[in-house]
Image 1 (cartoon, rainbow, N blue to C red):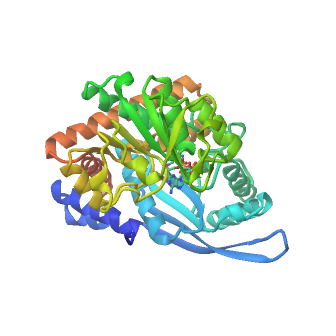
Image 2: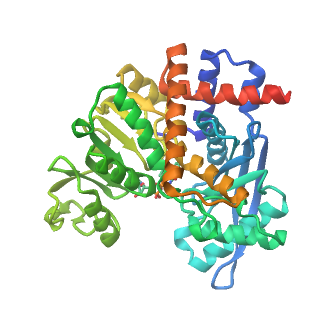
Length: 431
Ligand code: NAD
């Protein structure tokens, strides 16, 4: 199967939503075109002394509702098409969450796993130096955050480079920072917590109780592992999880998440050393009886909830028909393709889309920006209570749109986000 370019998927969803909600052509055209695309070479020195140059991108999609906001990823496959799609989705995500931010995204086409920590630091500084000197990033204009293969340490280096050039402090220029440099409490698990708040509301409407709800999770990284922990502590039955090496199903009917986390930390993956090729000695996992499944098999398990927290495009035209989950929660960006969406809809499988389900991350990033700008430091309980309100309001707003247009959750989210941005553009007189 050839994978369709992510920006084409975005445009397809946008057009479908615009058609359903009769959004005017001028607005559709504005949202189909990023406001600015920055492409540049990021040059840095390897430890060997050799000069290295890699392609860097920052796409600023729409700023009608506020400054551009969105992560920076370091990935060998990061390209302009992907960064454009992710920037566009950020505009809609911020609008769906109803936070005063626009959408942007950055990427560097590089494999940071092949670089030393010193080299990653040089790369991070070089990327942000260009962004600062070209006036792409500033605290009121464009505020990046971590994304795939970037983390709080990378944000710290980028902040330091920015402030060195400015000659004064400006912590709000970047979020997802370490707490010591102005990061927000609650940011590390905000994406998962936000998705969980939405899931709880969804399940409440279906009269489903935690103890009778089974969950399978693809991806056991930041988003997936925190989600597994939050859901299992709330009494849900997480019965299967997977990472890039494959998955495990817990035969007791509810995985011991802390034990799986400890196992992953020790062996590097869930399948780790106890699986070599086809042979798995699963009894090395002493306290937890389980059997192994492939990632494809995990997706097709019969569960109440399937949480996608790994990659884009994992449910597509060729496997959507085999999905047996009751509903899908998209913590990853773009894990269900438009073709798969149509198949799932016909099978009555609800999909809570990424632009709502994983909006908790950008929401707490926005809280971090507010704290940095006011000089305040919020308590964790306060952060999470504000997040809960925002996520629940967003879901309630989405349900209203869904009801009005009798459409899927994804299309309702696209309509809700689009209408909010269009209103802001109209008020500004730009369309
Ligand atoms: P991560 O790198 O911490 O974790 C990714 C996980 O996916 C890892 O467990 C990895 O082993 C697994 N994985 C990789 N390839 C896989 C494969 N082929 N099959 C199954 N699993 C595979 O990344 P993350 O921060 O958890 O992000 C995951 C997704 O969530 C991404 O799409 C990201 O854009 C999205 N997201 C994350 C955040 C956040 O705050 N972390 C916010 C919004 C969206």
